[in-house]
Image 1 (cartoon, rainbow, N blue to C red):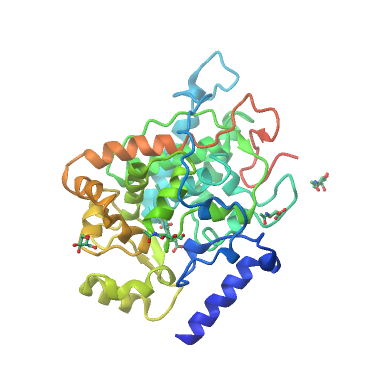
Image 2 (cartoon, protein in one colour):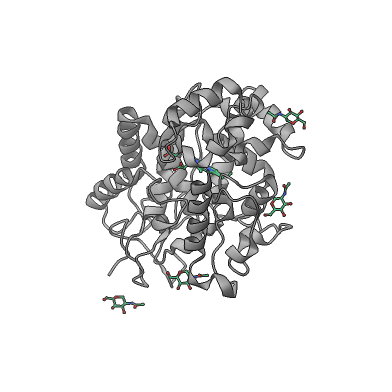
Length: 362
Ligand code: HEM
Ligand SMILES: *[C@@H]1O[C@H](CO)[C@@H](O)[C@H](O)[C@H]1NC(C)=O
Ligand SMILES: *[C@@H]1O[C@H](CO)[C@@H](O)[C@H](O)[C@H]1NC(C)=O
Ligand SMILES: *[C@@H]1O[C@H](CO)[C@@H](O)[C@H](O)[C@H]1NC(C)=O
Ligand SMILES: *[C@@H]1O[C@H](CO)[C@@H](O)[C@H](O)[C@H]1NC(C)=O
């Protein structure tokens, strides 16, 4: 126990970096199992620590359109693009459903950091920094599905070179993964037209809410992106699929349903890096089960359990009980998330159609 706490303090100091004393370093408080929020660990002006919250404008999606690559008279004509992505995702999910979960999360982590511009995929940037978003604590050793994006991109480049952005491929892949993992019950209308960014910084992943975030922090991080508390609750339902590491929930075992906790304790067996299924009941089905799990204390993270707070528990109950209600809300919320901070054809600076999704052009 003492060694674990010491390790966390070392980790916190590491994340804070040498600049901790001047108050200019970064804040990953939602990702640390520390008892209290420490403003010294946080960078000045970080969105995560500006409470009470300020809502950003709802994302407009200006410049995006449905069937963006299907218009014969446009420069971005590539009619096979969406079909190629769907085929790649269908095959990947059939072989290994967890990859579908990875693709849905990839989209979330892309959109919340620098907007949906595929910055999450970069290993080489315009600034030549190697500490890209992929190296940030929320992403490192955790994100998966990159090879599906790369395979779709390669096939699309062969069909229509320089036409389809990696950002759109990520968005279409998340839509298609939602479709297959929901047994075709979730049909997101996903417009296209995003351009790819040219920068990516690990430290900016502190804008992602963490498993130890409380409900105020969750609402604040979504509001900063122009999303509502309702959308936060609805999108959290994605924790009905995929996996999570024990380090993010082992401290909560006593607060969980005892049988569920016992099973998790056995699976984790004291190892922080072990992965377990997030939804014990239907681990590979994107359904509304998550909300019943919240009510039954069968969810993993603090950030899941706190949805049973006065402000959000009505929505949890409604999503748990009303057939079809959550699915329709999830479709709209995913579409809206896909409009956050987008770059489009009109953006002359810092936007392009990448040739290879992990590298900026030139
Ligand atoms: C509300 C705040 C959220 C927090 C604090 C959060 C946190 C996390 C954490 C800690 C993990 C496990 C990572 C690991 O152990 O390596 C995870 C997994 C996952 N999250 Fe979230 N998440 C949030 C919202 C979302 C949203 C909005 C989506 C998508 C719409 C999403 C989709 C997923 C999926 C699908 C997985 C499983 C990934 C896999 O199996 O590869 N999460 N999340
Ligand atoms: C990044 O590296 C390239 C190629 O070595 C160079 O042309 C460019 O000026 C560098 N950019 C920055 C911001 O250092
Ligand atoms: C984030 O990292 C980049 C380069 O990796 C650095 O230039 C920038 O100053 C950092 N920002 C903060 C707020 O620490
Ligand atoms: C959530 O955490 C913040 C610090 O980030 C704290 O100020 C606030 O009181 C907490 N809210 C709740 C509901 O616990
Ligand atoms: C949810 O909140 C209510 C009211 O505060 C409480 O009675 C109930 O035990 C909570 N349930 C869970 C699963 O936390």
